[in-house]
Length: 434
Image (tube, rainbow, N blue to C red):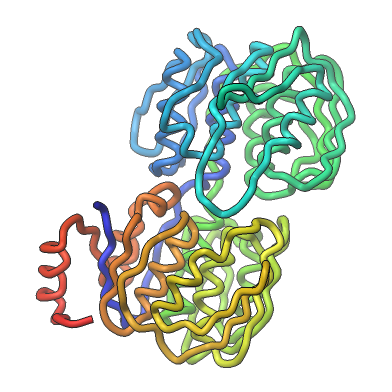
């Protein structure tokens, strides 16, 4: 079983380079197969979710050429099947983007009901509402989402709830629909803008991405292009929080500082020094931080994907903090693991009340989901003693070379598989007890 073993107590100091945004890459890869020419995607993160999606795309018959670790070329001309039932795909949420891409291009798609992290209900009702408004039928049968249309015609669609997934999915399908589509009450995250820019580079006509209303003039076909994925704001934010929790000094490079505004603002509020440059952000923490309140909201609000990492920082801050989770209904599953490390947190419904402590104590914990896993790594790095994290497969879904990057900053962390590996780590690092 893959595990991380961590010896905490070292401030993280140095520079770290951020990779491409996982959430943008997944939508972009789905968009790429809508052309019958090669589309080159660069700055692609080498993470499990991306690799699973590429495998699923390959099984449709599309050409997938991995030129380099962070570059792939795709061509949808050779697609022979609109059915995606790969067992791995069932484990990742964003596989549903193939619904919009295949429906838009072939007017039919069947994709296995997706899984992903256990952070709460993420229904696809808004996706199906959008597809139906464009003229498709949609149903769930035998574990498959099936959408079909004789033709797709542009429509005015108001989403009942702001949804990143539905916004991207319906935007994909509407790109090749007849006439104009207007999407209202849409998500505004940076990766929405990135997918729209990618589609426009392929010949689509999309305006308004990043605002409340997206207008799409349908085109007959898309062509080849080359496109670079934006930097990952969540990976960047994770390292920013790591600097705060370990009282370190990290310069996060290859980022778009504007995408990190809400994180930078909150870190300044609790006592960090945050400096912004053209494509970098530096976070310095010199002393114990103080409490605050956090409420997760759709972009440009505080991202739900950064809530666990922020909670780890606040668990070490002076005073009582209140964290309200407004997006997902099961995102505090990591709290029990933090309590095992000494944290003082009470969860009531969607609110966590955090009484800050001086320091975590290293112990063995289990990773419940992707972002909680990153948060528990940060906790381990800030803790006194050794921590062992189990089920790190979740972390690999969204972080490339995570342990290696942390090691380069002075963190003591290794990936291990056996109890003997853990004992060797303890001996090497002079820690024979918990």
